[in-house]
Amino acid sequence: MKLHYIGIIQNETKPSVEIVAEKELSAYSRFTRQKYEPRTFRLPYGEFMTMFAKTVAERTRPGQRQDVEEQDYTFHAYGRTEGVCGIIISDHQYPALVAHQLLSKVVDEFLAAHPRSSWSAGQTVSMPELKDYLAKYQDPHQADSILKIQRELDETKITLHKTIESVLQRGEKIDDLVAKSDGLSSQSKMFYHEEEYRQGKERGLRAELGWAEMETESYADHGYIDMPPPLRRQRRGWHNII
Image (tube, rainbow, N blue to C red):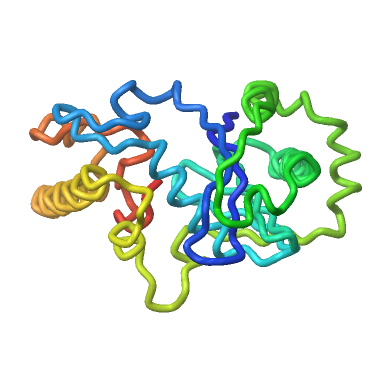
């Protein structure tokens, strides 16, 4: 079980703004955290975590709780009437009820400590507690009793979506979001499309060889650069990354 991200997004206007966030990137190589390194051909996960957190937040209504599953990740979202949305990114094994209890705690503390005037215009703020929470709640048993959480959330509907695309509006594509994103560097956008092209070559090779599925270890033998698990295409399309 793993927590990757805790953040607060100002989502009452578009584009949304990441007001404060803490990310756990130690699972990735140093080249994939925030900075582009030419030899790796890998995307900076920190930037894409922010982009998809904002994408989910923009599509979370005030008072709504929803979980969006995308490949190896679940985006837990909690919208508030004050104009912000709390986002947690975890793996699928992390208990959703614990994630939503933590979201309630984080958003409540954020709103209590930071008046609307300090962030309503899109200003970033500091919330050092997020680093402690991200470390502490890697173990979900650090949360209060699961039964207590269940009682608190029993009457709260958490909408589950299976992909990021399922929360997009009709006609929207992730390609378009990447192209329009101000939070992605030009290098990230370039290598997003580079990976898309590479994955197209992979599909062609897979079809040529008659493989139903090509694991990373297999296509690496055919000259493709090895990629960490979150960027493996496998059965899903590139439009379902992260």
